[in-house]
Image 1 (tube, rainbow, N blue to C red):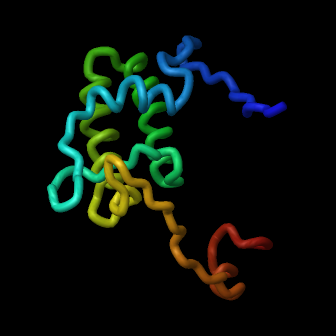
Image 2: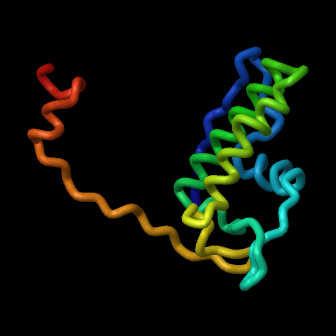
Length: 137
């Protein structure tokens, strides 16, 4: 028997339920239909996109933020909220996702490449101790 994760219900500030129950529904039933871009394919120029968007941590975080902003703005500002969403939310996030060095840069419409995390080294304790939120400060 497999267990599917329990999703917490999210309600908008006005108490209403969102139009889309999760980010996957938002991407598949809305975003994929309203964003019309030529996709990069081989030597053909176009937007980088990955059909397995959910396998990219940066993409899932950005698309989740886009979904929540869309749901909130459509209710909180019914007159101009969608324009604000396109200009201030979708355009910069989509540009970052599809950028030359963005998370989808090695993917294509029919190809997924596993993302690799940025290399990091542990910070020396004396560097961390200088930060205002360091323990004991």
